[in-house]
Length: 523
Image (cartoon, rainbow, N blue to C red):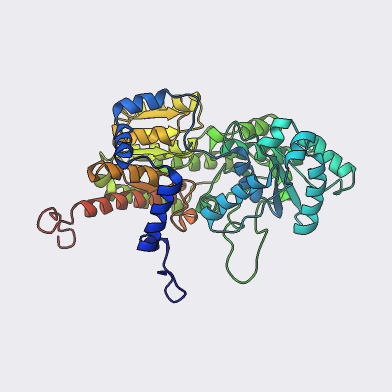
């Protein structure tokens, strides 16, 4: 056996050992009915063609690897950002296992989330009994101070009413009447993870403030609220809080999971750590205003804040890159009366210096990208600021208003005139574009590595390297602690992009005496 306790090998190169190659060969021969390799290669080459791309973009009844996740995933992240709150999913156990492992692999942290394990009987008779037992057990076992309930496909298809079920659970005495159980209906078959986040955010804010607005006065607490949206870069929570602190602005982050998803290894397990308090939620209507950092993904929350809290929500873009961070800070200064301090002006100057240093390497480089609506727009904006040329921008779950705003932004820059914007498309569409409209790089989450593999299979000259910025990032470590927002986030993105370009240059110029023209280390 090549594997032993004395010499533990990882999967690569272990599975390249003869014993494992033989096992794989027998599996393919005896069980897989494998198509001949020349036929596989023929079909592969066809899928890289213009002809196939046209057919691919005409399909309507099939989605292949969408660049999005389902609603309850976003609802769970939102709930995790509130103090001593246990996310609770009314649905099957397998769904929650998916959510937890998804976050486990991205954050490299244990994630607390429970379900009431609906099975076939609940699908027929409804899941109220599951909720009776589930809420009672979850509260007794895990001792949260709030349980935030969302739903999965099964519960939504059969029409379970969370408001009634939670009310009956309290009426029957399974949990106390005053125990907070906000909820949101989050059907997985519509929307996406960002929709689920928005639904849960609105559900939590509604639960604690809708019927308690008496005595609330906009601006009376002198603070601002910040709604981060579905945000998986923990550094972004910290950089926004830091910038506000430097401005002397008192703010409430409406959902902040940066502590519970980044707890120290000091011998003490923390199921709950940090987060926005219930007192902060109740006080939020007294703020001057609420900033939505991801406005294209916060429609429901924005509507509630404007209609119930009577706050005027500023119309801003995600604070990514130089110009949009400027706009964000100037608007904060305008509504609070606090000046932008010299420390942030200096930080801005450092970013401008970095952009000046690196623009020659990024100018004219072609990038394709995919991800969530606000992130994709912010990333595109920063690429334009650097003189880079976005070729294709794909968002599976954006709407036509977003596409119109994207095209307007692109038309205002000479570097965006040839950019194609794609909505309601998936990563199989994106794969076609990497062959037919080849960029220099693609930017996206870990799933892009399979597209890079396919482009490389066609030939080294067709390879499109992946730059990992987004969610989820499973195959690299600690990137979730970075930041993409503010001047600091722009510095991180710029560093990542320009070094990817330089790394690629190194890879292509390693031929001794043939391609090694640059002499970077001696000039």
